Image (tube, rainbow over all chains, first blue to last red; front, top):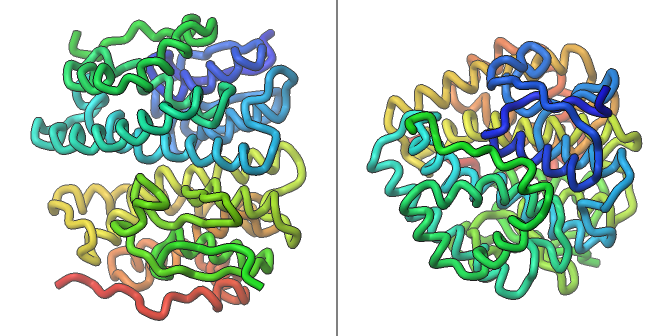
Length: 206
Length: 206
């Protein structure tokens, strides 16, 4: 039996972030196919992913990734020093808030047919995405990865979102206009963890 | 002596969470009043709060609380054990993701900060009605969100929860959550909560 169970589906960006963490740490996991809503009543919020480790059940992906990092051996997913760790937390939170609220919830999810959305709403979200991605691109000009010279948890949360950009014309163009994000994506794309978790998903409409 | 500067505004729920953490840990701080649109030099994502501590600039309140807890002495804001930490993280994330995007958005629309169409407002309200009982059930099982001791998770919920009575539709939801009310009374008695009560509360839009 695998060391941990991850409940979720491969196209879910947050499910992928937890799988990336497990792979980067070398933790053996079983993916239990579970769609949003099916995690209730264990997770009253009904969201995916959820994790089980023995008799311990945990939800919310930042909590899961931090638990995996703390509990298992393998390369650390957070810098060890207080400032480095804080900056990793900061970028992780920016991904989960600003990037998720603009590019993921505002553009990718409606274009993929996951949630309803109007073309007008998508255009507003695209404008906001441009501003947010621009800040990431500027940051990645001076830093190899989001929290410094090493891959951290922050990068593992950005990958699943950014790697959907090429599937949507405007986000593809935005990605191509962001050379430092592009360089970062090539570095990340070469990692075995990223290759092994490629969802091969292009939306419900196609 | 001032240890850190907190850039933000007292009525901002996330600013208050940082101020609460400073009071709980007895960290001296200077509050530098700044509106979200004027903070770009410190936080390019234009959100409050941010802190400065020596040469460190840090934004995103979850990152700030973790940094304060790790860097300064005083009562710990996270449990000591691995599972306790994870559950505290889980509840913080559930607040900052689910509850904030329902209740805080509803408040922002009612206060006129972030106008939303009636249909959207209704969705925020419905989601709040769905989410608060989840917190109520948890607070029926444990004294605080992450167990028998107060943690960072409670400091994220309190500023949000304390606005519920000011808006009749949210007050009705809070009135149907007796365990939240019991927890709210305990939290309200803490010196940190009394000291950070916003002097100028926003008023309802006409």
